[in-house]
Length: 397
Ligand SMILES: *[C@@H]1O[C@H](CO)[C@@H](O)[C@H](O)[C@H]1NC(C)=O
Ligand SMILES: *[C@@H]1O[C@H](CO)[C@@H](O)[C@H](O)[C@H]1NC(C)=O
Ligand SMILES: *[C@@H]1O[C@H](CO)[C@@H](O)[C@H](O)[C@H]1NC(C)=O
Ligand SMILES: [Cu+2]
Image (cartoon, rainbow, N blue to C red; front, side, top):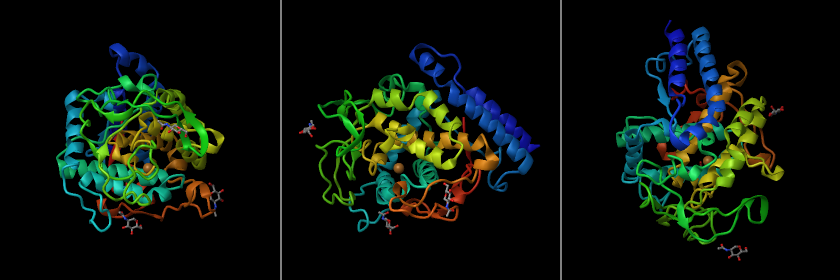
């Protein structure tokens, strides 16, 4: 009974939050974002049926009665966005948990998350744990916002396809006081090369930013750690360039790329990713990008829509607070993909322990551990496969 009402309520929540006819610029963008949202509705309906027939994975902890619903940034009220922003800024005022011996450059609680990501970068990208690791990372951050900074909402996500035609004027990056801050000021710079200048498999033309973000709530944001692989050659080198963990305070820079957004993160790109990759290995690989084959994918496409420093640095990218909106959407896309074939995909993994399996290594396993450093205790990958199981209890609209 409870479970059936879950299906219905979840469905209603999805439809209710699905974009209603709006005014102005958003109307046009939203019409391009309906494909993924329809898949989400279909997926949550499946999820409701699944718990109705098979029960909840963790019934004493997580049911319809207490499930959190993560929402799209553009559907939040202005006050809800400001509450989220205030909590992020609060993190940058709280004392770090990382000991100075481990992360000499950490100056606040936000830096703990950046440091954990930097420290593990090589083991969590291009690997089979990529989605599970980032799911737990994003959730741990959301919990810190709530438990340490009084935030009452949940982690919002950035549905790329809604804004792919014009990311600079999106409610995420338009620089208004309820946005995640604007583009960087114009500073001349070269094209971006992915994965690197020496190996330019994919070239993105230089955008119209490149300098410090001077508009919106994060204009005074301090990026303290990194770079490790700097987004621009003029980013000051970290005193320990190998670890990136020494103190290196600098402004937040962005170079919002319309080409990355339009080329790789349209609604149809995400629909294609979800519907044309039944094999978990190819889903995870095409999502992250297949650079030797000139394929950027939605993950790297989203990161380079933000670009800049630290946004264009694989290691330090969580230093830009927009990171977590991006990765919430990565997680949502995985969640949708899982929901569309729960039996086969809920616990399906693809990939190995090493980046693009170089050097060759064993497959990632459900019993492997996800380490969150000072931010949270370790969990198994299996515990990170279900958003109603393990430590989690959330769904997406
Ligand atoms: C980095 O990872 C190593 C190995 O897992 C761990 O021992 C160390 O404490 C980590 N450092 C940070 C800053 O999280
Ligand atoms: C652009 O790239 C060229 C060649 O690598 C380099 O000499 C130049 O300094 C770069 N310009 C900027 C603004 O980074
Ligand atoms: C590793 O996973 C691949 C599929 O991604 C599979 O073909 C292969 O058999 C697996 N290897 C082992 C040793 O289980
Ligand atoms: Cu990452």
